[in-house]
Each structure stands twice: as C-alpha cells, then as structure tokens.
Image (cartoon, rainbow, N blue to C red; front, side):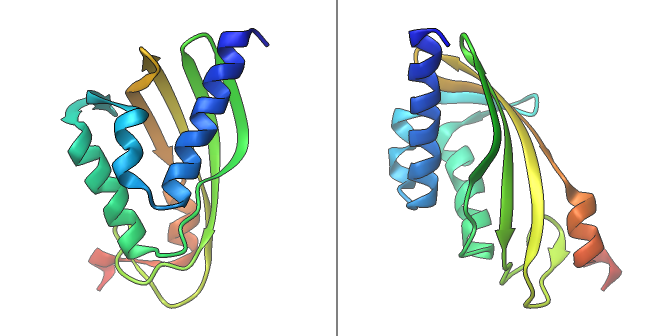
Amino acid sequence: MADTEHDLESHYRAYLRALNERRLDDLVHFVRDTLTYNGEPMERRRYRDMIASDIAAVPDLRFDVGLLVVSADQVACRLVFDCTPRHEFLGFVPDGGRVSFAEHVFYTFEDGRIATVWSLIDRDALARRLRRVSEG
C-alpha cells in the first residue's frame, strides 16, 4: 500500500472513531463544506444532521469496519452494525431487540476530506427483523 493510501486509511479510521465517539463537530476535519451524497448535493451540516438523527434513533450505533479497501483518493467500506434501535430508524419501527445489518459505502476524498458518498444499506436485513412504519 502506498503511503498516501495508508494515510487515507488512517484518516478514514479516524473519521469512524469520531463518529463512534459522537464527536460530530469534528466532521469539519473529515468532510468538505459541500459534498454529494447518493447523487444529491448537500452541506456538511445536513450530512452531520443525518448521522445525528441515526444516533438519536439508535444510541448504541457503532460504525465497525467489516471490509476496507483504499485506492488513491477512494475508500470502499463494508460497515457492519449490531445495535438496538430505540426510535423509528430508516423507516422501521423498533421492537426493543437487536438488529444486525451492513452498509456498503464508497467515498471519494478531495484535499483529504470526503467529497462524494455512495451508500447502500442492507434494508432487507432490517425488514427481516423489524416492521416497516407503513405496515402500522
């Protein structure tokens, strides 16, 4: 692995550590002022608010690396989650039990900060365990 890729891997792991330690104000060090999330332009504050909302719904949410690939200015990661939603989460109603699911996420970094995010969450794993909000 080239030094720059090693540095990016360390930087990405520091980003996840900040999320897991709930240091969302530190996102300024990891995420550009404006970014693209699943094709939609947004400001860092909105990105932060999305993460904060997930954490509020799932207080024990931890971003754990299952698989990580770094190449030049890109990161691909399979994040694995084993947590207990307390409030509506991603369109599902919690039942007090634990859920396990994965997120496959791809990032492009510019000047050392996240510029683009493509995220795919395994909602089927959630659907097998939880009831959709619309099923009321």
